[in-house]
Amino acid sequence: MEASQRPTKRMESRCTPATARATLAFEITRYSLHKGMGKEKFIQSTPVSVGGHEWCIRYYPDGQKNVEDHISVFLELLGNGPKVRAFFDLRLVNQENGLSSTVKSCLESPVEFDTLTKRCLWGHSNFKRMSELEQSAYLQGDRLVIECDLTVIKEEPIVAETPIAVELPMPSSDLSDNFGKLLETAEEADVTFDVQGKLFPAHRIVLATRSPVFKAELYGPMRDQRTQNVIVQDMQPAVFRALLRFIYTDSLPSMDDLDGDESKEMVKHLLVAADRYAMERMKTECESILCTSLDVETVATMLALADQHHCSKLKEACVEFIMSSNRMDDVLASQGGKRDIPVKDMQPAVFMALLHFIYTDSLPSEFDDPDDDENLEMAKHLLVAADRYAM
Image 1 (cartoon, one colour):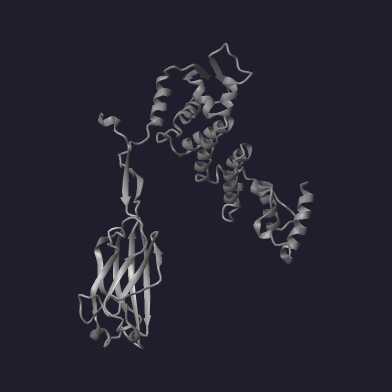
Image 2 (cartoon, rainbow, N blue to C red; image 1 turned 30 degrees about the vertical axis):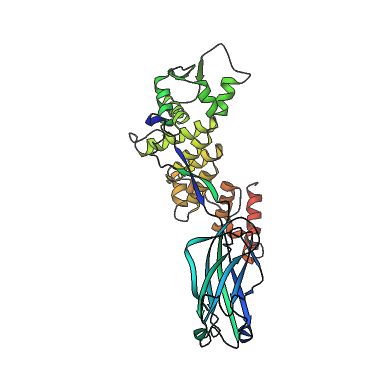
């Protein structure tokens, strides 16, 4: 398989032994009365099910026949089932602090229990010397507790398949570059736009995919199927070129060769074009640029533009800019000296609130509390002002 055809995903499986764990506890009360039962005599704990098998602790008070002065303790597999592998740890509990200590263990490797071959017992004949046991904290109040920590390896292991992600260098997307070249070369173009005598070849399906307005013009019931040329009215060629570029590449053109005013003017034209062809993403980008380039000379016309093309964020930014206390006079002065129109019998705060309503169709936020006495008084003045100006 060639390198370029190698799969990007590798599947790895992992086998994990399934286990079951439990602690068996066997309490021997009246220890002294169990002594003297004789060698090979034993007592069994209550059976406990672990890993689908029955287990118990077998205790020899006088030990097995081949040992002297030792108790013998074993873990026993009951029943006549299949072979079982397990780890175990036989312990004695300290009666003074309740902690258990290992006496004999089999934890490094599992042992096999097999009831059919009589290998159902694993433990230790010389588990603990009686003389040491009877002088220790393990035996208190004639009571002895034996514990066994047991881990049973189940018959069926768990085999899991795990997808392993292969880290591959991912090249950057060239989708916009490819579509940009398609626009530049005009390969397989099937429609031409005439903008003030400047011709722009394009692809119907691309335009219709990106703009519902183009879709209606090029594929709708009112389209002219006989012509390949579409005349675009009321738009500059540079603006239409930028519109096509955004349709094909999803990005605005660079405006580094334009000065600040020219760049702002181009963005305003692009916003109008985006609104005309229902290009919402392009319209939002233009709106965002204009929101950060407001000044006293153009904010009034910018507000009118925002209102005409339903740009709520730009409209809010313009109103906030105009209503700033240190800018209102400058904005009015930029509009041909209209600051000199006298307004009689009206407080400045009332006129400011009136202007706010004219521009935003809402009262300033400081009038939200209807229970405030000052707001009630202001509402009276605004009522008079609204009646005065037929609002």
